[in-house]
Length: 243
Image (cartoon, rainbow, N blue to C red):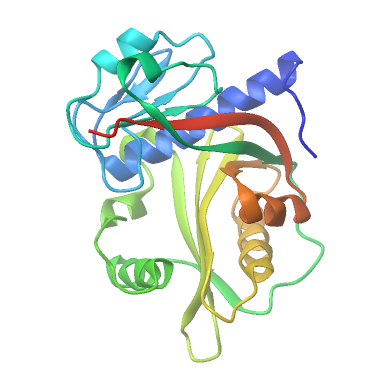
């Protein structure tokens, strides 16, 4: 189900989701700064991560773009409220997605894998290799294990292992305020997507009991999230400069 944010409560929830995601991007990027309207980095961010994330509907587009390197190839902006028109500045819409929200509660089903929180650089490298499917590139740096980088609050990498200890599913979560953001949910070939969500939700509920979850998804991943108790609460867009 998709809900149009037409109440103050939903609008606050959208802002909380946007800030949570911006804090996560800041932590991964190890750069940038926050204003009341956005987080942005003056230098190109790591692969898959935007150079700016808006925090309000009325973010000033000109000021936002002035804070990033629009001359760099593939500069990008996460338009958290799908409210900006960056086409006049040469940007194109890369994709659209839906913010999602799940009230605090444990999943009904129990995970099949053994789930635990990643600890230490070696485990994080193994987690990233499983997430990537091929190798670890260092995108998720060890500083993230400290949980305070970039103002992201508490951070945890979650892993579901089989009896031999192989990581077959996982997710990244970060808490800011009264919400926990979930992202990078993955499962290895042959592992059902439902296992990744069930295991991640179960472990997150034990780490931060009583807190709601937020994130964003699209396509089949959105359908899976909705099946696991999330509700779509509003659209976002990612703009990219072809460079």
